[in-house]
Amino acid sequence: MRAIVTGGAGFIGSHVVDALIARGDEVTVLDNLSTGRRENVNDGARLVEADLAAAAEAFADARPEVCFHLAAQADVRVSVERPDFDAEVNLLGTIHVLEAARGHGAQVIFASSGGAIYGECDGPADEDAPLRPLAPYGASKLAAEEYLETYNRLYEIGHVALRYGNVYGPRQDPHGEAGVVAIFLGRLAHAQPLRIFGDGRQARDYVYVGDIVEATLAAQGHAGVYNVGTGTETSVLDLAEACQRVAGISVETEHAPARPGELQRSVVDPGRAQRELGFRAKTSLEDGLAATWEFVREAEGEDAVGAN
Image (cartoon, rainbow, N blue to C red; front, side):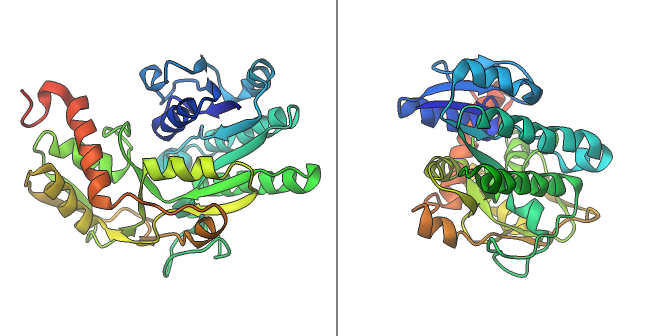
Protein backbone atom coordinates (compact mmCIF):
# COMPACT_ATOMS: atom_id res chain seq x y z
CA MET A 1 0.00 0.00 0.00
CA ARG A 2 0.90 3.67 -0.18
CA ALA A 3 1.26 5.12 3.31
CA ILE A 4 2.19 8.43 4.94
CA VAL A 5 3.61 8.47 8.46
CA THR A 6 3.58 11.88 10.14
CA GLY A 7 6.29 12.06 12.77
CA GLY A 8 8.01 9.16 11.03
CA ALA A 9 11.45 10.35 12.12
CA GLY A 10 10.48 10.16 15.77
CA PHE A 11 10.56 7.42 18.40
CA ILE A 12 7.32 5.55 17.67
CA GLY A 13 6.85 6.77 14.11
CA SER A 14 10.19 5.46 12.89
CA HIS A 15 9.34 1.97 14.16
CA VAL A 16 6.01 2.13 12.33
CA VAL A 17 7.86 3.11 9.15
CA ASP A 18 10.23 0.14 9.54
CA ALA A 19 7.26 -2.23 9.84
CA LEU A 20 5.53 -0.76 6.80
CA ILE A 21 8.70 -1.03 4.70
CA ALA A 22 9.14 -4.62 5.89
CA ARG A 23 5.67 -5.54 4.63
CA GLY A 24 6.40 -3.96 1.25
CA ASP A 25 4.53 -0.65 1.49
CA GLU A 26 5.47 2.55 -0.33
CA VAL A 27 6.12 4.96 2.55
CA THR A 28 6.39 8.75 2.78
CA VAL A 29 7.50 10.34 6.04
CA LEU A 30 6.24 13.84 6.90
CA ASP A 31 8.36 15.28 9.71
CA ASN A 32 9.80 18.73 10.43
CA LEU A 33 12.68 17.13 12.41
CA SER A 34 12.08 19.41 15.39
CA THR A 35 12.31 16.37 17.65
CA GLY A 36 12.67 13.53 15.15
CA ARG A 37 16.00 12.48 13.73
CA ARG A 38 16.88 12.02 10.09
CA GLU A 39 18.95 8.94 10.96
CA ASN A 40 15.82 7.25 12.33
CA VAL A 41 14.17 7.27 8.90
CA ASN A 42 14.34 3.97 7.06
CA ASP A 43 16.34 4.22 3.82
CA GLY A 44 13.37 2.71 1.99
CA ALA A 45 11.10 5.65 2.86
CA ARG A 46 10.87 9.10 1.28
CA LEU A 47 11.31 11.97 3.74
CA VAL A 48 9.39 15.22 3.34
CA GLU A 49 10.83 17.71 5.81
CA ALA A 50 7.89 19.99 6.58
CA ASP A 51 5.26 20.91 9.17
CA LEU A 52 1.78 19.42 9.28
CA ALA A 53 0.51 22.56 7.54
CA ALA A 54 2.13 21.10 4.41
CA ALA A 55 0.04 17.92 4.63
CA ALA A 56 -1.99 18.74 1.51
CA GLU A 57 1.14 18.97 -0.65
CA ALA A 58 2.66 15.82 0.83
CA PHE A 59 -0.56 13.86 0.28
CA ALA A 60 -0.84 15.14 -3.29
CA ASP A 61 2.62 13.75 -4.07
CA ALA A 62 2.27 10.46 -2.17
CA ARG A 63 -1.40 9.67 -2.95
CA PRO A 64 -1.64 7.57 0.26
CA GLU A 65 -4.29 5.01 1.03
CA VAL A 66 -3.58 5.26 4.76
CA CYS A 67 -1.98 7.83 7.07
CA PHE A 68 -0.45 6.92 10.41
CA HIS A 69 -0.61 10.25 12.24
CA LEU A 70 2.04 10.20 14.98
CA ALA A 71 3.42 13.75 14.76
CA ALA A 72 2.69 15.64 17.98
CA GLN A 73 3.71 18.14 20.58
CA ALA A 74 4.16 15.57 23.35
CA ASP A 75 5.69 17.54 26.22
CA VAL A 76 3.12 18.07 28.98
CA ARG A 77 5.11 20.94 30.51
CA VAL A 78 5.27 22.74 27.16
CA SER A 79 1.50 22.33 26.82
CA VAL A 80 1.01 24.06 30.17
CA GLU A 81 3.43 26.88 29.34
CA ARG A 82 2.34 27.28 25.69
CA PRO A 83 -1.19 25.90 25.27
CA ASP A 84 -1.60 27.82 22.01
CA PHE A 85 1.43 26.09 20.48
CA ASP A 86 0.24 22.71 21.80
CA ALA A 87 -3.16 23.21 20.17
CA GLU A 88 -1.59 24.43 16.93
CA VAL A 89 0.36 21.18 16.54
CA ASN A 90 -1.96 18.61 18.08
CA LEU A 91 -5.35 19.97 17.05
CA LEU A 92 -4.85 22.20 14.01
CA GLY A 93 -2.17 19.85 12.74
CA THR A 94 -4.62 16.95 12.93
CA ILE A 95 -7.22 18.98 11.05
CA HIS A 96 -4.66 19.59 8.28
CA VAL A 97 -4.09 15.83 8.12
CA LEU A 98 -7.81 15.02 8.10
CA GLU A 99 -8.49 17.45 5.27
CA ALA A 100 -5.56 16.15 3.23
CA ALA A 101 -6.67 12.56 3.81
CA ARG A 102 -10.26 13.38 2.82
CA GLY A 103 -9.05 14.59 -0.54
CA HIS A 104 -7.53 11.17 -1.26
CA GLY A 105 -9.96 8.87 0.53
CA ALA A 106 -7.19 7.84 2.94
CA GLN A 107 -7.82 6.36 6.36
CA VAL A 108 -6.19 8.16 9.32
CA ILE A 109 -4.87 6.16 12.27
CA PHE A 110 -4.22 8.68 15.04
CA ALA A 111 -1.86 8.27 17.98
CA SER A 112 -3.68 9.50 21.07
CA SER A 113 -2.80 9.09 24.76
CA GLY A 114 -4.64 7.04 27.36
CA GLY A 115 -2.86 8.57 30.34
CA ALA A 116 -3.36 12.15 29.19
CA ILE A 117 -7.04 11.73 28.30
CA TYR A 118 -8.40 9.59 31.16
CA GLY A 119 -6.65 11.44 33.96
CA GLU A 120 -6.61 9.74 37.36
CA CYS A 121 -7.73 6.09 37.13
CA ASP A 122 -9.23 3.90 39.87
CA GLY A 123 -8.23 0.85 37.82
CA PRO A 124 -7.70 -0.09 34.18
CA ALA A 125 -9.74 2.45 32.19
CA ASP A 126 -11.77 1.21 29.24
CA GLU A 127 -12.73 3.39 26.29
CA ASP A 128 -16.00 4.42 27.94
CA ALA A 129 -14.37 5.67 31.15
CA PRO A 130 -14.71 9.37 32.10
CA LEU A 131 -12.34 11.62 30.14
CA ARG A 132 -10.64 14.07 32.51
CA PRO A 133 -7.42 15.50 31.06
CA LEU A 134 -5.28 17.40 33.56
CA ALA A 135 -3.15 19.34 31.06
CA PRO A 136 -3.65 21.10 27.71
CA TYR A 137 -1.77 18.22 26.06
CA GLY A 138 -4.53 15.79 27.03
CA ALA A 139 -7.21 18.31 26.06
CA SER A 140 -5.70 18.79 22.59
CA LYS A 141 -5.47 15.02 22.03
CA LEU A 142 -9.09 14.61 23.13
CA ALA A 143 -10.22 17.45 20.87
CA ALA A 144 -8.36 15.84 17.95
CA GLU A 145 -10.16 12.56 18.69
CA GLU A 146 -13.49 14.40 18.52
CA TYR A 147 -12.55 15.75 15.09
CA LEU A 148 -11.80 12.21 13.90
CA GLU A 149 -15.20 11.06 15.12
CA THR A 150 -16.89 14.07 13.50
CA TYR A 151 -15.23 13.32 10.17
CA ASN A 152 -16.30 9.68 10.50
CA ARG A 153 -19.93 10.76 10.91
CA LEU A 154 -19.87 13.62 8.41
CA TYR A 155 -18.03 11.88 5.59
CA GLU A 156 -18.71 8.22 6.50
CA ILE A 157 -15.00 7.50 6.83
CA GLY A 158 -13.34 4.96 9.12
CA HIS A 159 -10.64 6.81 11.04
CA VAL A 160 -9.14 5.30 14.21
CA ALA A 161 -7.82 6.81 17.46
CA LEU A 162 -5.39 4.67 19.45
CA ARG A 163 -4.98 5.59 23.12
CA TYR A 164 -1.46 4.43 23.91
CA GLY A 165 -0.23 3.61 27.39
CA ASN A 166 3.27 4.69 28.48
CA VAL A 167 5.36 3.68 25.47
CA TYR A 168 9.04 2.80 25.87
CA GLY A 169 11.72 1.15 23.79
CA PRO A 170 14.73 1.74 21.51
CA ARG A 171 15.11 5.24 19.97
CA GLN A 172 13.39 7.00 22.85
CA ASP A 173 15.60 9.92 23.83
CA PRO A 174 16.95 9.49 27.38
CA HIS A 175 17.73 13.20 27.69
CA GLY A 176 15.42 16.08 28.47
CA GLU A 177 11.67 15.57 28.76
CA ALA A 178 11.47 11.87 27.95
CA GLY A 179 9.75 8.73 29.22
CA VAL A 180 10.90 7.52 32.61
CA VAL A 181 12.27 4.25 31.19
CA ALA A 182 14.58 6.12 28.82
CA ILE A 183 15.61 8.51 31.60
CA PHE A 184 16.36 5.73 34.09
CA LEU A 185 18.35 3.65 31.59
CA GLY A 186 20.19 6.73 30.34
CA ARG A 187 21.30 7.50 33.89
CA LEU A 188 22.25 3.89 34.54
CA ALA A 189 24.47 3.98 31.44
CA HIS A 190 26.55 6.52 33.35
CA ALA A 191 26.09 4.94 36.81
CA GLN A 192 24.18 8.01 37.97
CA PRO A 193 21.56 7.99 40.76
CA LEU A 194 17.92 7.56 39.75
CA ARG A 195 15.65 10.43 40.73
CA ILE A 196 12.14 9.53 41.85
CA PHE A 197 9.53 12.22 42.33
CA GLY A 198 7.26 11.77 45.32
CA ASP A 199 7.01 8.39 47.02
CA GLY A 200 7.46 6.39 43.80
CA ARG A 201 4.16 4.59 44.12
CA GLN A 202 2.80 6.28 41.00
CA ALA A 203 1.69 3.48 38.66
CA ARG A 204 1.73 3.38 34.87
CA ASP A 205 0.94 0.94 32.07
CA TYR A 206 4.31 0.47 30.33
CA VAL A 207 3.96 -0.93 26.81
CA TYR A 208 6.86 -1.83 24.52
CA VAL A 209 7.14 0.02 21.22
CA GLY A 210 7.15 -3.21 19.22
CA ASP A 211 3.71 -4.05 20.60
CA ILE A 212 2.53 -0.51 19.86
CA VAL A 213 3.57 -0.94 16.23
CA GLU A 214 1.69 -4.24 15.96
CA ALA A 215 -1.50 -2.66 17.28
CA THR A 216 -1.11 0.41 15.08
CA LEU A 217 -0.88 -1.68 11.91
CA ALA A 218 -3.69 -3.96 13.09
CA ALA A 219 -6.00 -0.94 13.37
CA GLN A 220 -5.96 -0.41 9.61
CA GLY A 221 -9.38 -1.15 8.15
CA HIS A 222 -11.17 -0.66 11.48
CA ALA A 223 -12.83 2.46 12.93
CA GLY A 224 -13.33 3.98 16.36
CA VAL A 225 -11.28 4.25 19.54
CA TYR A 226 -9.00 1.61 21.03
CA ASN A 227 -6.76 1.46 24.08
CA VAL A 228 -3.30 0.05 23.43
CA GLY A 229 -1.56 -1.17 26.56
CA THR A 230 -0.93 -4.18 28.75
CA GLY A 231 -3.62 -3.63 31.39
CA THR A 232 -0.90 -4.11 34.01
CA GLU A 233 0.32 -1.33 36.27
CA THR A 234 3.92 -0.95 37.47
CA SER A 235 5.01 1.55 40.11
CA VAL A 236 7.99 3.84 39.56
CA LEU A 237 9.74 2.12 42.48
CA ASP A 238 9.30 -1.30 40.87
CA LEU A 239 10.38 0.10 37.51
CA ALA A 240 13.58 1.50 39.03
CA GLU A 241 14.40 -1.91 40.47
CA ALA A 242 13.66 -3.66 37.16
CA CYS A 243 15.85 -1.24 35.22
CA GLN A 244 18.78 -1.82 37.57
CA ARG A 245 18.26 -5.57 37.42
CA VAL A 246 18.27 -5.62 33.60
CA ALA A 247 21.31 -3.35 33.41
CA GLY A 248 23.20 -5.27 36.09
CA ILE A 249 24.01 -1.97 37.78
CA SER A 250 23.02 -0.82 41.25
CA VAL A 251 22.85 2.90 42.00
CA GLU A 252 21.43 5.17 44.67
CA THR A 253 17.86 6.42 44.30
CA GLU A 254 17.12 10.04 45.14
CA HIS A 255 13.65 11.24 46.10
CA ALA A 256 12.50 14.67 44.99
CA PRO A 257 9.26 16.50 45.86
CA ALA A 258 6.18 15.24 44.04
CA ARG A 259 5.39 17.15 40.87
CA PRO A 260 2.13 19.13 41.06
CA GLY A 261 -0.71 17.47 39.18
CA GLU A 262 1.12 14.22 38.49
CA LEU A 263 -1.19 11.23 38.09
CA GLN A 264 -0.96 8.56 40.76
CA ARG A 265 -2.40 5.81 38.59
CA SER A 266 -2.72 5.54 34.82
CA VAL A 267 -3.49 2.16 33.27
CA VAL A 268 -5.67 1.22 30.30
CA ASP A 269 -7.95 -1.74 29.68
CA PRO A 270 -6.91 -3.27 26.31
CA GLY A 271 -9.92 -5.60 26.08
CA ARG A 272 -11.55 -3.95 23.06
CA ALA A 273 -8.31 -4.09 21.03
CA GLN A 274 -7.95 -7.76 21.95
CA ARG A 275 -11.49 -8.55 20.83
CA GLU A 276 -11.71 -6.43 17.68
CA LEU A 277 -8.12 -6.01 16.47
CA GLY A 278 -6.77 -9.34 17.64
CA PHE A 279 -4.06 -7.43 19.50
CA ARG A 280 -2.44 -8.51 22.74
CA ALA A 281 0.81 -7.06 24.07
CA LYS A 282 3.36 -9.87 23.96
CA THR A 283 6.54 -8.26 25.29
CA SER A 284 7.16 -8.64 29.02
CA LEU A 285 8.49 -5.63 30.89
CA GLU A 286 11.75 -7.47 31.57
CA ASP A 287 12.30 -8.34 27.89
CA GLY A 288 11.35 -4.87 26.72
CA LEU A 289 13.70 -3.23 29.22
CA ALA A 290 16.52 -5.53 28.14
CA ALA A 291 16.09 -4.55 24.47
CA THR A 292 15.92 -0.88 25.42
CA TRP A 293 19.02 -1.16 27.61
CA GLU A 294 21.05 -2.58 24.72
CA PHE A 295 20.00 0.35 22.55
CA VAL A 296 20.83 2.93 25.24
CA ARG A 297 24.28 1.44 25.85
CA GLU A 298 25.06 1.49 22.15
CA ALA A 299 23.70 5.02 21.76
CA GLU A 300 25.79 6.31 24.66
CA GLY A 301 28.89 4.73 23.11
CA GLU A 302 32.23 5.02 24.88
CA ASP A 303 30.70 7.06 27.69
CA ALA A 304 28.48 4.18 28.80
CA VAL A 305 29.32 2.06 31.82
CA GLY A 306 31.26 -1.04 30.78
CA ALA A 307 31.86 0.20 27.22
CA ASN A 308 35.09 -0.93 25.61
